[in-house]
Image 1 (cartoon, rainbow, N blue to C red):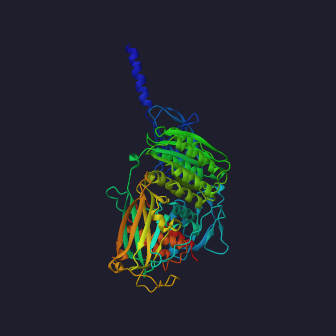
Image 2: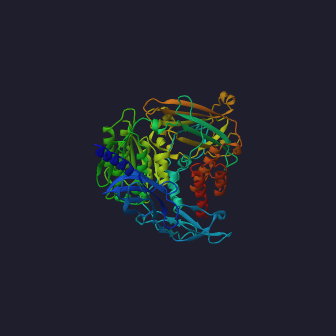
Image 3: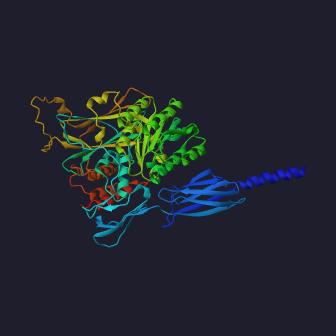
Length: 640
């Protein structure tokens, strides 16, 4: 009896001891020695993944409470060759440390010489700038791409310019954009448009710049660039879903004009407190998605999202290539390992049947529909829909039908060469969702972790803006950006007219450049109205510049609500405006310069940089500092 008891105690203590083994390590760049964050590390036994870890900002990872055995680990990181290490032996109560050096899969682009703006030295993790002539006018820049060779992105010189570095032609498509012109308040006092919280344009523009190339003008949507950044607008009070903040000041790029700055802040709802989610990942696994910056980055992002799931959430995975298929039935958020494994086993190959995939995804979402929950499809693709429902009109009609059934669509763009930007933006708009372009692992973390609530939780839908300008104070106005968001004036009160959505914590910024009534400036080709009747009330209301009206619906409602704000004729000097106003103006003016806008006036990249530096604020996530570096890089590239 005593012997049996002693043996039992021994085996219990042995089991407890075995559970204490630890495997940890550090992942670094083989060439530079720099740590690699957000690398995925799989701990495998007998060809099965037991657990997954991700390296932190210092490149460190750890697996705790691992039973003694002989393991294999696989390491994957965007822009690096995968690493597999076998025969890792863990003994009882051991701590094993492994240093892993990863080899970049890069293309060395040709060196070229150009005049550097103010001799600035730029150094980014994926762009190296080396000074070859100190304190002189020239800088030699060698740009190293982290894309795979299969992307066919070897750079060549533009023979017509000693400064511009061009990539080969691609299959990317963008809709034409024509800047909003000034409108005469006497003839058109109302400005009506749909809000926009998409952010794809900024990250796509960033991708071009980091590749040593200026973006096409059609890729630059100013409102998406401005709305990429967070601003310190106040949280809404009472039961309103968003707050409204206005500023009225001098226009920095044209001192004879004024600038109206409008910011709205969506109510913050923590994802942990949100309604249950019924998600369907709809993943393009066609041949065009085979590179690391496409399907590889999709996997990284979805792994991050799965880590945030709660027991009340459920996820299914639908893929499409030559045909569509269900690779993971709707699975409870508690079973993360099953979902992770399904994601990791995805591979690319074949043509693209986007229409068939979308049909299947909506069918699965409908089967597992959660009443009063968040029912959403997350489409990840390079945008190349060429089989099945290939026309934009057919896809839009399908998505509009399903939107009305309470299933929303979020669209995520990846990679280089096949982006169908116009189609992807429209699908997200019609699906009551957001459109984001993900160009690196940090952006994946931003979309799937930091801003998860905003991208999944809708707090207001069909949000429209209508601004009425007072002709006693304003002669002309121009909406900056939102070119493809304009609505007819009568659409504002039409609850059947679709408009934009605001997610949890989202903020949206709008700006008008206005010309005052006392100005002699001419911008309209229309003769003055002979029979116009001036209202006596205009004199009484000349202390008002404009009235802003917002119309929105609660996420499950069909009838809209109205919020009204008045902006008074009390301008302040631009230097006294908030950092919210200053920094968003710097981004908007950068967008105008990239678009070669006739309205950018005398503003230059140096002005953008100075304004952004002075209004950077705390910049906790470093995105504003990165923006300044992007402007500096463009100042080098765009030397005409």
